[in-house]
Length: 265
Length: 312
Image (cartoon, rainbow over all chains, first blue to last red):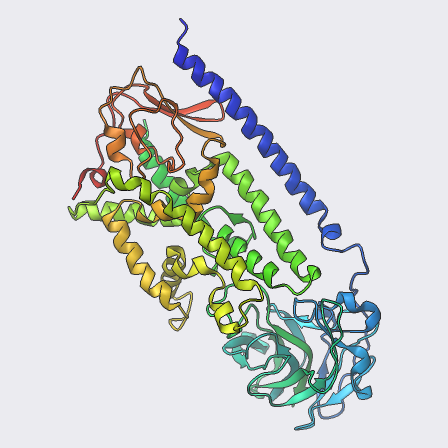
């Protein structure tokens, strides 16, 4: 027996299933295309940043022990004009201009002192397209085993002053202690101190290269106290966004940049 | 036979647990079309509205196409995913998976147990209430994108307009407070003043009106564009309907009427199936996934659940 309402329902379901099925198929195909074409769509066809090295990082200078963090450098924070399109210190396409750094900073693995207290860092490689900055995301830094009283870091935050940024020190035997890392913004902040580098030229995403006495881009020295009665094995860098600009920010963008780590007995 | 309401509660409970399973499986980075809060520390999925707002703000604020490209790309992926998810389940995401919907249903049950009545939005006001979700949605999009444009030079103001929905979204306050209570987040975690103010309003609204938030939710506003274009359909057979009005009475969203026949998927309908569960007319209401019939009304109908029964 033919039920007109049933027939209508069936026809409507047929139509609907066809349209939804076709649209879903198209959507999934588009999704597949977007995923597959990511490199081309994001301008990945040009030169890509590369991992430099292998580096022969000096072990120390007698007083300080230098930590090899070259394996953790994951973006281009310092670059030259040829490769300025790779600039990405701040996720906004900006970087320190290698050409304008003081001669003592480069071009590869220069040992630079902190003007305030003489702590030394191995400044990263800035040649070609190499990565030379750690965008901190809970990275594990393996330490030459030993007893240290202080851990020094060379770095900066992206936006506001970092507060409540927690990393961890892991010791032999499984003990662990946390530390608060305090860093000022790389383009200047209210409490600038322990400035290691004050660069006067940067590369911006729009292709401009601001330079001059009014341009500042800083790298700071931050230090963390360490229990020297225990053998330090590992350093866990902070992660996530801690900027004071974004209240309760939940973005995944790391706003801490570290370039070098030095240990003091 | 298992009642639809019980199946739905089981689905909501399972979803609520699954959303919180990020600490086991890690964050998949997939934005779901529900209010799966980005402020949830161990979340398995991302929130579509967070990605939308973040993408609009950051692509608008970008100083060069190269900077905007990654945000636009993420936004494009999220939008396509949204469409695909909406095509499959439509507004059923709201009633079956969304954690905010779940909490509201729990509050309704608690209210009913306490014997407290609820309010219904009178029919004459429905036409004014229904557009609120679209106005809300438009405001979220306009503010997110507009705040990023250079005409707001004050950084403080710009940043305070970042993620406008998150200031009033009940999922944020709900999950942040829950995580503080469970010791996952420190008690000093910042909660914006607007969240502190809006969350009690949400709770009171959910107690006074069943699905009070859903009525104005911008996520439903966006999903409702697919109300006739998704695999989950709801049909009403006029010849079997006795026009008893039960469906109109139990529908918290004001989506049921006694006139429409055939495909009765309305933009407001979140597929909770309270109408079908309680419809006393055998086979009068039925739901399909693509062409497969999933369920239909049966005689005798489910007795009216307590939380649907007590009206103020």
